[in-house]
Length: 277
Ligand code: UDP
Image (tube, rainbow, N blue to C red; front, top):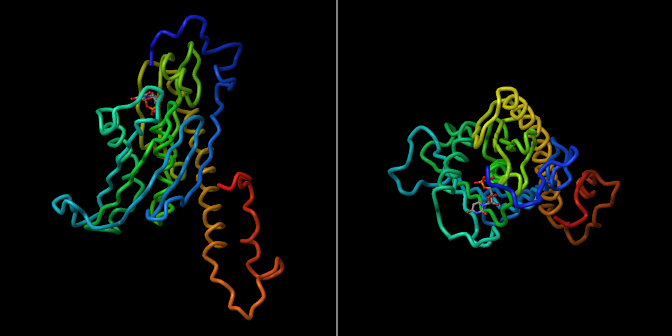
């Protein structure tokens, strides 16, 4: 944030941004639930140049035992950037930034999970950033809540996240890498679209009062759009599961035809991608 752009780089050009988007346009998002076999719930998400894998394990036994809470589950999140996830090699292991993001991710997810249903257990959420290109905390949170839903963890809603910001004096949605580096302001927000609550709000840079309300409104509306993509990923996941988990037909039975009961689950999910993911 706030770095001087290289000579000749314009972040805002005739109403368009450096990657050709308009002010309130999101980068393309793809979400796929249920990608890890050993996790209780998982999600793979691509958002612009971000590639994120989230895995949920639990509710399970707490180690170390002294962390156990007799009245509710503890929720632990670890955000980690792979060493190869950015242009310059990132030193592997936790650093101050990843500890901060792990903390805010846990704090954003805790209010949605019905932790009182699972006393004396832990729900562990791992967010692995395979490739990062600005907005990775929002991408990680969005993926983590799909993974929690995929694990069947009872929640009062899913969390969706998106940043707004300011570049060349213009309020914009979902900052790209150059906008994050050379722009004036970055404002990541996470909401529970079902209830309208805000569970994360951070800000780097400055806004006027008016710009701040505009940016918050923009990000909240974007979270609602992202929530639809999350829900579609879960629908696709269970359509796929219905096909995969169907017990094999006994040898003397004909395979089901399109007119048989339940044939709808054999159809390609509406909006499903051709790329087989
Ligand atoms: N980044 C990087 N090396 C690092 C940390 C971050 O290259 O050690 C890049 C990465 O592309 C990241 C972006 O800087 O997405 C913005 O980082 P920020 O801390 O603002 O978090 P994010 O926007 O990813 O949530």
